[in-house]
Amino acid sequence: MAKLETDEAQGLYALAIGSSGLAGEALVDRLLAFLADPATEATALRMRAAEALGARGELASEMQLEALARSLQHDTNEMVREACANAIGVMGCSNKGLTTLARASLELGLEDSSAFVKEAAEKAMQNLPQLAAEDFDIPQSV
Image 1 (cartoon, rainbow, N blue to C red):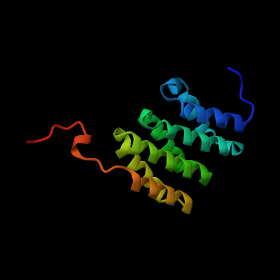
Image 2 (cartoon, rainbow, N blue to C red):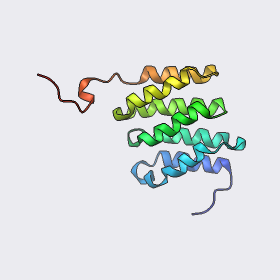
Image 3 (tube, rainbow, N blue to C red):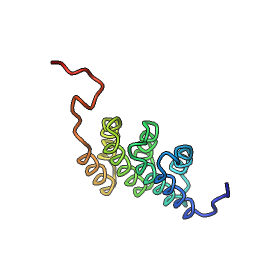
Image 4 (cartoon, helix red, strand yellow):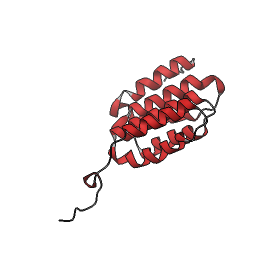
């Protein structure tokens, strides 16, 4: 695979992975690596990685949501944290198996020092589905 030279090219690559469905599953590790890169010049790339992980929606895993939650809590850039909150919200809406974890993860964003991050986390939480008993693997009583 050719080396992508610029953050912009890598960001486009990340978005393509996020939109590739099952075909991009083997490349999700790249998104996680981009998201975890604390290099100052990679801010846009970390934002794109968060957006791409969110775009995976119902294909997202608990591990991917947890990576976004770590960045939501620890990334030094508020735009990256805002992108993480948005992506967590998308995952929680698209995959009911992740809704509870998404809600808990977004609570971290409600305490953020940035008004933009707080607003994104609040909006994402409001959009999460309210889970009913049938959404869980629990036998219903008659």
